Each structure stands twice: as structure tokens, then as C-alpha cells.
Length: 294
Image 1 (cartoon, rainbow, N blue to C red):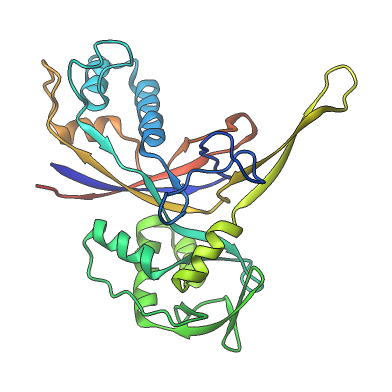
Image 2: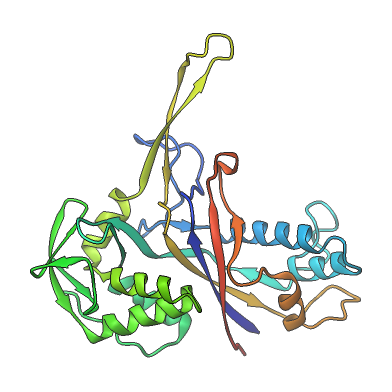
């Protein structure tokens, strides 16, 4: 089986919801049950990939057969006849953009997230030990002043680490290939926070927007038509895992590597995921990182 890491870099606010919420936020985003960290379900990502492949290759001979082999039958069309070769995992939060007094914003992550990411990537980059109320940065950071970071409403002590330098370089090269300006910007703004502080920010630093509905005749707010939606902010970075098995559709002449090369978006492709597409929501940059499976 071939495995492939993928990344989503949000270019606009991203809302992949779970329906109506029971709290103050009417339409919350999807979150993991145990950690409450935001995620984008794999089903949402797979649907977008399928739609992209259909639109991009519909005019090509044999493209529909390739699409069915990779993604499986269309709903209702012999859906139980065979499974698609592609399995799409959930997109997990990797770096959360957080408002900073210096440097405008920080890309924040934490040791727990890095451990989960390293498990999928199978890399040996060291994960720094984050002390209480201490933020670990690279030496070239623009976020600190006199040994302090000011993120949202938090004052956090700064610590520099070579492992933070290594993670910053890894993410910069992976997320912004051959874009030196963006690579430098990322390395200056990566911060590794303690797990508990990051957990707090993952719940309080998301974007909340109030929405209303206007009456056509009076151009005033329709009574009762006020609601609140939660978004992951622009510049959020997520990662997930794809797995590709042999094609099971009879008559498919391409192997799994050929199907991936033909049907998956190219690196840097702009896609739309989640709700509010008509008002610019859910614009993401798609990136992939191939690894060999067994």
C-alpha cells in the first residue's frame, strides 16, 4: 500500500461544521471527541478531491473509469460492487495562526501535535520539552521582545531551541517549496507552546462570525435571523494521510501510482472545502508529500 501525507493551508476562513450546536455558537466547527482539537473530516476532503478530478479530467478519454477506480462508484450506482482504491484520513490541526503583539501573528503548535505528526511522517526530528508558560521558538523569531511573547491575551516566557529551528525549517520547506519569502516568514513565526496553552487557544482563538438575513422588501434584518458561525482562521495549516491500494474496478489498466499522478491535484492547487463558498469561505492550498508504504 502506498501512503501519502497531504496538507491543507487555509487561504480564507474555513468552516467544516457538524450542524447546529448546543452552546453559544450556533454552527461550530468539527472537533475530535477526546482532544477537542479542530479537524476536517476525511469524507469532506475526499468529496472535494473527487469533484476536482471529475471537473479537471472529464474531457479526457477513459478519465471516468480512472475516477471510479480511485474514488469508488458514484452514490447509488452499484455502490457495493467494489471499493475505491483511495482512503482519505481526517485533516488534523498542525499550526494555528494566533494574534501576536509582535510579528502580527504566530503559527502555533505544541509537543502533542508534533508527536502525532511525527508518527505519520516517520521523521526523527526531536520534539522539545515545553515547560509551563514557556514558548519555544527559533533564534530568528520576530515574535519575542526581551524574552517574552504576547499571544492573544497571554504573556509567555520565550525559550530558544535547536529543535524548534529544525521543525521550522522542515515545515517551511514542506509547506512553501521554492518560495523563499514565505519560508522565511514561516520560520520567523513558528512557536511551540505547552500542550495546555495550545489547547486553550484552539478553543478560544478560532474565528466567530455573526450572520444575519435581510428581508427583501424592507432591507432590514429578518426577525430571529441572527446566528453565529465558527471558523478556523485564514493561515491555519492541517495535515492528513492518504492511503492507496490496488485498483479493484475490473478493467482498470492503470496502477495506483498512475491513478494518483493523474487524478490528484498538483502541489499548490487552490481548492474549496466546507461551507460558505459563495462568500469566499474554505479556500485552501493543497500540498502533498509522498512516502512509500508496504
